[in-house]
Amino acid sequence: MERDNLVDIHSHIITKVDDGSENIEASIYLLRLAKNAGIKDLILTPHFRRGMFEASVDKIKEGFSELQKIAKENNIDINLYLGQEIYIRRVGSFKEYLESGKVIPLNDTNYYLIEFSYDSEIDISEVVYNLKLLKKKAIIAHIEKYNYITLKEAEEIKATGALIQVNASSIVGRYGFGMKRKTLKYIKEGLVDFVASDCHATREYDYDKAYNLILRKFGSSVALKLFKDNAKVLLEKSDYE
Image 1 (cartoon, rainbow, N blue to C red):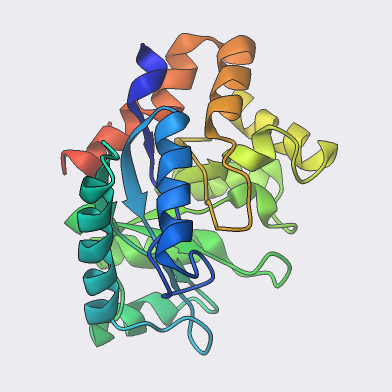
Image 2 (image 1 turned 60 degrees about the vertical axis):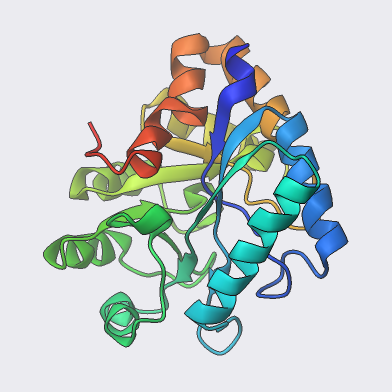
């Protein structure tokens, strides 16, 4: 089945590096949920947030290797890749983090998953442009959650060169009808490149529910692009079309 080979590019499953899994059991539980939801390829993206989540690259890689081993031992047939979700407070933050060697791209590509404050406004288009100057590419995490971003501004961010990710939980209405409507509007307008789970140990894994909803509303072509095909750029390390 097509739904059995989906890709999730945003998750918090590595044990004890951020606010995701607190122990190995929680990590195994989340991996099983992902597999049951049809995930074949899963990118692990622990937070980097100055002053809050600053696990070293070495510690993250150690946790990643351990999780790969545990998944194999528990017969969880899922391909794991490493990345990070990087919190940007100001326009110049990313360059500083990059030069420090503290941040990790998605699967060793030039693509970086970046997030911002939900309420404190920042010029996301300028951040995206600055990444381009560094020959890096931005994927904006859960854009629907930024309260200050309008549809027009999302279009401008996209036009600047960013790729856009929304959360499966937003699609199924876990954060209310307003958030669901906003997220579906972004998809309808062709602004969204990826749907991801952003799963934590305390959250539901809504990936298959979201896939089925998008399949019903927009058809299989759109559903497969958002949940699988567009992510090939990250798995195969190719250029995005």
